[in-house]
Amino acid sequence: MASRPAAAGTHGTKMVARDVKVFYGAKQALKGINLDIQENRVMALIGPSGCGKSTFLRCLNRMNDTIENCRVEGLIALDGEDVYGKNIDAVQLRARVGMVFQKPNPFPKSIYDNIAYGPRIHGIASHRDEMDEIVQTSLKRAGLWNEVKDRLREPGTGLSGGQQQRLCIARAIAVSPEVILMDEPCSALDPIATAHIEELIDELRENYTIVIVTHNMQQAARVSQKTAFFHLGDMVECDDTEEIFTNPRDERTQGYITGRYG
Ligand SMILES: Nc1ncnc2c1ncn2[C@@H]1O[C@H](COP(=O)(O)OP(=O)(O)OP(=O)(O)O)[C@@H](O)[C@H]1O
Image 1: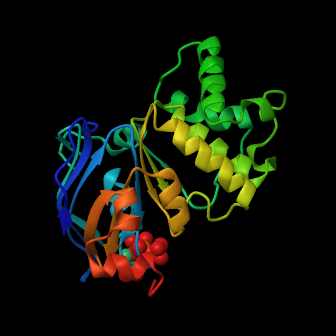
Image 2: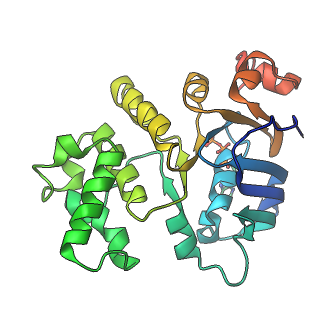
């Protein structure tokens, strides 16, 4: 594991992982991950299938809590605070560290209610006007407003796959997260919808810190500023995305990006 010294003027650290180990029963999936995630940047997690990318992503907002037999050791901190600390409420944490999944998963509710659901349960809006504003702003930020503004009462499940994924991004945005985790968000989408989401990711980093798991190396190169390469439960190297793709230091990274395995 190695990471080069940070260049002057880099963005502040939003989340850190220190010696993070994850076990599913007796099986160890992560072997002591150290990683710094900078704010208002996109970090891509890449590596062969089964190397632990999704497992690591789920540590960042404690989604692994929901998996029976899963045990997490080490430190994950958000703004310096241990997210596994006793006084941290996992539901509140997941509002601060939102997640978008591989397959778009809108609730079986209207477009409006998909967005309003989170703010409602977190008591974020007290008036109808306020909620309307949150719904509109979230849909605008997710680049979906113009396509759905006249059909907010129609079911979210009636949208195209790409629109559904943007709806899920809008739903994550609606509770004002600081970090957005994306687990292969484009793998179920066609190239046009994928391009749309990639553009959106680039815009979103102005306001959010983004960590994205992707199998698509061109995508990692297009959307991220930092890339971390995982292999067999280790984080092999993390660097500026351009460095990882043009000048990787570890031969395992080199092997993966040149398609020798994975
Ligand atoms: N719920 C689970 N129970 C038991 N083992 C699991 C569970 N989830 C993941 N694993 C194991 O942990 C290891 C890491 O899996 P993980 O899904 O994090 O890898 P990944 O790099 O995201 O893979 P992929 O790219 O195929 O999605 C694998 O060996 C996997 O089989």
